[in-house]
Length: 622
Image (tube, rainbow, N blue to C red; front, side, top):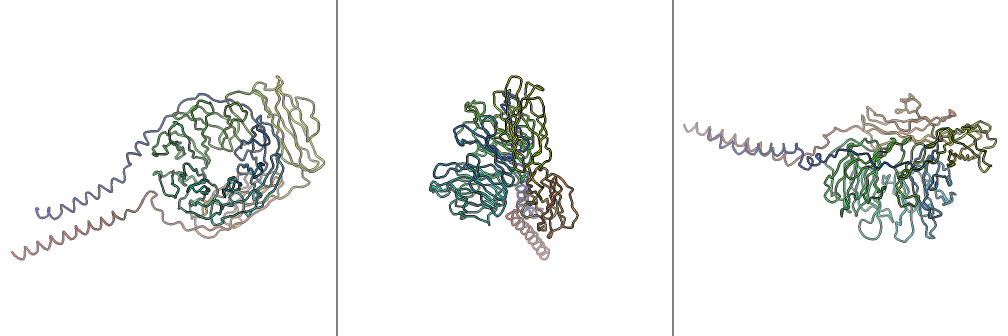
């Protein structure tokens, strides 16, 4: 027994040490335990703002609202609603609108040229436009593919001239007249972050989707590339790149693309999550805090130490807006959280939920915060499925004018204009109305809530409505409709995500189809394998998902149908890759442990052989 103990004691000690070391990897670290203990209970319901005004029209607000000072010092609201660009004044009255060739999906931008003249740069479909401050078209450029990003205006060359950076699934740089300076068809991108990361007084472009690519802004030449699967949104702070990957884990990289911090927890796949990360200073500390959404929580971490400071439980959607502002002028920044396609906006102080506000209509874009009436107080400007709402601390009792009608018609056909959705906080049924078409005189005031009108000529017609309450307060709104001689076919188009699709994984299909008369009522149906049998029925939904059980090449057919039953279709071929063997998500092969195990087994085996040889020799001597 003594000799056996001497032979086996060292291997057994080594085996015990090996097991204990590898078992430690299965337990959470103390940092993670401390992070979980910082979950904050959400309480409170104070300082709820009130409705200042709202302007309702039938179309959805499709871009964030940009606050600009065009033509004067008075702030104005610039935004897109489906295929139309609008400019409103600070009281909610329309100044002008201009219809473009397709839906406006991204916010416009303001370009100031070398003569200090302002131009509105906006993308719609495959085209990018320059619009004057008066609402007239200056130029437009037709591009090879659909624009997928907001135009970014900046001085790319350092010569005091502004250029336009956009993405058509790859980056493209234009000058102020729309001429292409460079493009990178080999770089997949949808969103950008701009900064001078190497302090050479020239900016660089952070972009990419399945990887991070840094380009020289003036030439488009690649400076470096890092392999990260990332969400579209990126932030630059103090020459650091902050972003979330497709699992919503947070990453911070330095100017060379090297990792400073990486979130250690995995979460559900959220490839379409946008606007869910920001940098703001809530504690008036030397370094600000990073706020991001992960696993149905708002997390606040210290940007210097990456320590989790606060967590709030929230209900998330595919698009979640985080914004920071001080709207109550208390010198403390609040977090504003908005899950799009809901009707609520939430305000959080550093420690708790302060208030929530519920709107009559679903939010369609992230809110904008600005002082639009020069009262030194910040208003909240909200775009919804039915128009604009502005909140602040002062209630407004003006009535709300609203026109409901079709967006188009045909010569000599009757169109009903319904005003019954106009409202007022005090007057429920005592409102009066008057209206006019184009520049004709207004009608007399009446309590009639709807009218019927036909038109003998094709063209654009503007109906203006004024609504008056019993105290004489008047609000107005307007709506433009198109009158056509006949119905035109819609145009089918769609996109597929992700770029690489494996069998049994979900593929996401999005219809980008459009119709001259009425985009909102287009219906779609899908044939995912090209066999002529449609897997979906006609539906107004623009997005669908589908899983292919087998790898191979498939023809995908999209059909779209307008209200006049005119149909167009588009076929695209996609490749489904064979799904590789799945590996446990957080498992990293430990080759050093494997080598150590083989050495240990060898030592034990050799020890046993030596022991047996010694025993045999002892028996032979006896």
